[in-house]
Image (tube, rainbow, N blue to C red; front, side, top):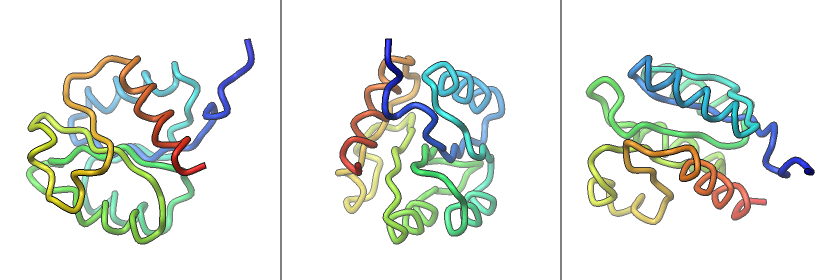
Length: 124
C-alpha cells in the first residue's frame, strides 16, 4: 500500500497537559506524521510559530490558562494551516476562527487523521 502524500509532514503540537501531548505525539507517529516540536506553553509556541520549520500545527485552545489565539494569529500571518483542539466546543472560538478546523476533546485517531488530511489537502 502506498504511503499517503501527507506522511512525514512536519507538525507543531501545542498542548500543556503532558500525558495528552504524549498521546497525541503517538497518534501522529502512528499516522506517519513527524512532530517537528511539541510544546506546552504559549511563549514557546509563539517563538516556534514565528520561526519554526513545520507545515501545520495542532493547537490546544487553552494552554495552562492562556488562550492560544496569539499563536494562531502568527500562523495565519505566515500562511500556515492549523487545527484547534478544544474541550469547550466550536462555539468557544472567536468569530474570526470559527471557520478553522477543530477537534473536540476527546477524539480518536481516525478523527485526527481525517481532520489533518482535510487541512493539508486544502492548503496543497
